[in-house]
Length: 336
Image (cartoon, rainbow, N blue to C red; front, top):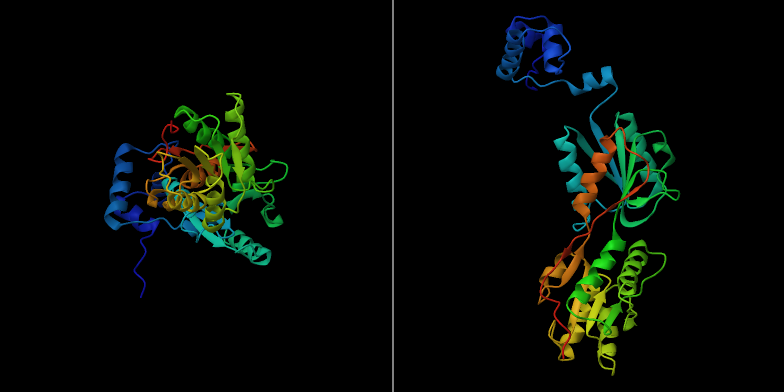
C-alpha cells in the first residue's frame, strides 16, 4: 500500500491554527497578518510530519505546474550534446521546476504527439532543441505557449533562441595562431558548406580575424568532416612544396585525421605544424599532444534557455552563447 500522504489539515491541527493560516504560511504569503509564533508553529509541524505539497492540486488551482518540456531530435541521447540536457535540468531544479524530456529522432508525427501529450499534462513552457545548429520549424501546436529554441532559430528570429557564437569562435581560433607568430602559412582543413551554420559562421570569423591583420589563408584543404578524408587530404597537402605552418581544422574529427597524416609525414605537432580545432569533444584531449580546441557551449545553452523561458520580461531574438577556447599543447611558433 502507498504511504500515507500528510495533508494540509493535519499540519494545521498539529500547529493549532486554521487550515487557511497553514496554507498561507506554506505558500510563503507575507501579505497576511499572521503572527511570527503561528508561522513558526506551522513550519515546525510541516517538518515534523514531513509534509509535501500536492503539486497536482496546486496546478489545478493556479494553472501552473512548475514543469518544462524539452523536445529534441537526437540531442538527448547524444553523449556529447547531452550536456544541453544536463544544463537545462540543473537550472530547472534550481528554480524548483521539473524537466520532461522527449526525443523524436526527427519524426514530425512523433514530435506532434509528444507536444500534445505534454500540453495535456499541463506543461508550463517548452524548450525546442536540435542536435545541429540550424533554422528550425517548431510544431504549430507550440504556438501561444512559452517557448525558447535551443541550438536553432526560426526563419524570422521572432522566437527567443540560444545558439553557439560560432563567429567569435572562428575569430578566436585564428587569433591564437596569430599570437604565436603564424601569418602566411595558415591552412583551413575541411569543406565549409554554406548551408551548415557552424561551417559558415566559423569561416566568417576566421576571415574576419585575418582581415584585421591584412592577411589571407595560406591555403584550403578540402575534405569531409571525418578522420579518413581529412587524413588523405592533409597527407597530400604536406607532401607539396607549400607546406602549411598551421592548420585550422573545422572540427576535432578532422584534427584526428590531420594528426595521423602529419605523423606519417614525419612532422611533429607543434614543432613543425600547429593545429587548432573546434568542438572540444573528448577526442581533443585524447590526441597527443592534446589539441587546442574551441568548445561548444552545450551546458550553457541548456542553462540559459531555461533562464530565458522563466523570464517573463524576455525579448524575442537570438542570443549567442560564448564558445571558450581551451589552449593545450598543439600550438607553437612557426618553424624557422
